[in-house]
Amino acid sequence: MNQKTWLRLGFDAMTLAVEAQTVIALRLMKIALGDQAALAESQLMVREKMEALSALQTRALTGWMGLSPQLTPRATVAHVRRKVRANQKRLSR
Image 1 (cartoon, one colour):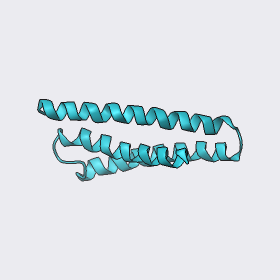
Image 2: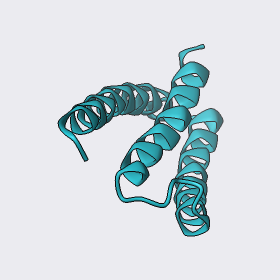
Image 3: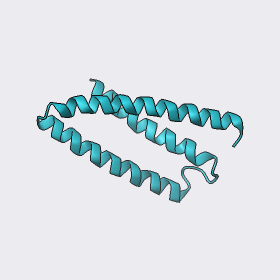
Image 4: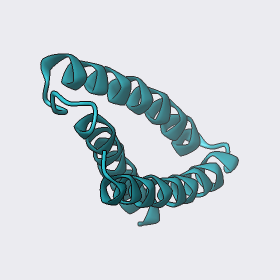
């Protein structure tokens, strides 16, 4: 990978980390209530993690993420960021 590609991947990964921390905070606030919605959020969180891992493995094995080592990290970060942003939007309502 060239330097520009590495810088872009680093920026995308850093952005993902910040977005993920926001989702974690939002989820913790919801779970802290300890009600039925908290239980549902906990179950959804675990299910989403398992589904995301399975989807990434399938995409990697079928070549959807690119056939070169340079494309796979960017496709992985992009896939996870889409999921994190969807959770952020849902939890922010």
